[in-house]
Length: 325
Image (cartoon, rainbow, N blue to C red):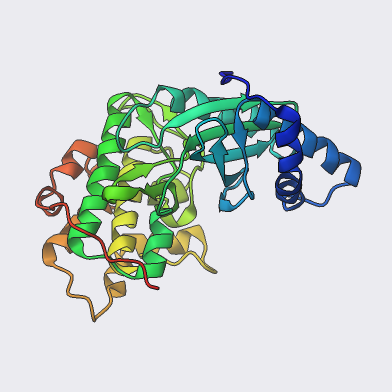
């Protein structure tokens, strides 16, 4: 794996990292103190040797098999996000299949709306991915803090997501885990997608059989356990993201329901009953969401067709609502 130039004064920085890295590891699981100390030294050493520092280990996000913390590049003092995967605590299939696939795929992706992977570092216990830091966090957190976004803002966000997805699909790569949490907000209203752990290379006619992603964003064909088009599943997820951005609500509730019940809600378009009455949502916006959430994936648009939906094509760049103080 690629490594960056070693930093100087390793011993000093290892001491500086002692508290933050120990806290990070202790938050992962209850282990014997010897194991914690060994892991702490391993993570501290590999980070410092490659020129990075976890700072105060401020947690930015927690995934299924990893944590993402804020860090810095020691020489430049540039803030970065550091994704840490503890190889001892992840399933073998993830370590041997999905993690290498994520790294291999991510390294090849170069797009203005895709988070840049800066470095990949591996030690005895950890795989560390260093990436550019989002100043404003993920879209879900932003919407939860600031409420439903205007149609222009939501359309501007989703156009950027679709631009990244179009780039991926054009290069025969499906994301398979698109959701608000995996779309990050940067300065100048820039949106970039991240988390490529479930990406898959495929042709337009290939079908997937693995259940990937989050249930709330999963297309009906996935919930039913059928073979599915990974590209069309990405389109469904974009439809869910659009609904969330507009309403600050999920279109379908996954709580205390079976997959079959959730699919019935999808089939009957129950999300239409979830639009807040106080929001004046245009018919064009509702139509766009309806098109993206087409139940039959064979009739669901591909990414280029989705980008040509009038509601998206008419959007303009606008300023977003400021965070609540």
